[in-house]
Image (cartoon, rainbow, N blue to C red; front, side, top):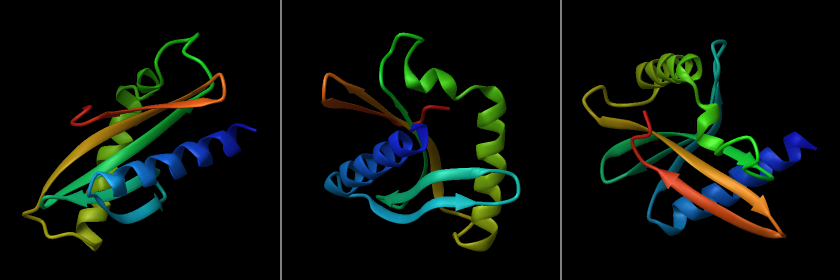
Length: 115
């Protein structure tokens, strides 16, 4: 069930980003180290985006799950991505998109430069 919820959150987030003018470069970019949910580009900035989907905020906001250890992994995966796909002089940032599914509604919050 959690994988289904996560996949739904990523799908909703992709649509949100496209509507905001982002170009999706990769989804579920995987390396041996870890994975980045969405890699997108807008205004010559590459955005490495972690999507966190929850059914409630009972145990805190979804972004709170992106702790220091996870941030370190995202940075390493992003570094690998740049080596293979991106111009090394391009700007980049790390974003988090929170998706909360509550009362048959979907609440989404995009945190730019989250870490």
